Length: 169
Image (cartoon, rainbow, N blue to C red):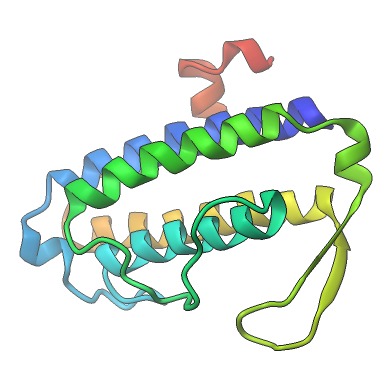
């Protein structure tokens, strides 16, 4: 199972690179235009993904800074946000590389931002959530991009495996 999460962390990095490159081709106005995604614009959605990742990394690893809001705008410019995304993708990869099968089966206790009730869950399904959450919101950024007339992105895991993820096969 650990190898599976290592693959997802690498895929996550790759997919983020594709989305950020596509967003870099937008005008600043288009990048900030509300196209009906849950967080509105590509800008706010990418900030949300980073905010949520930082919240989860803080909960799971005990390290790093975490915002206290899911809609926090951590960076107001794409370049700063993109640089932070690269750093945090590396943090995710490195943290998962340090896990063991025993850790994946272990329990994690945390208090969600949205509900002030402590929760205890097994780490492995929480990691599945973290990666699924990113995929979900990257899909919203993709929909925003296509609504702005940009070409569709090939973000499926199988494309990652074919292009640069052969080591995971």
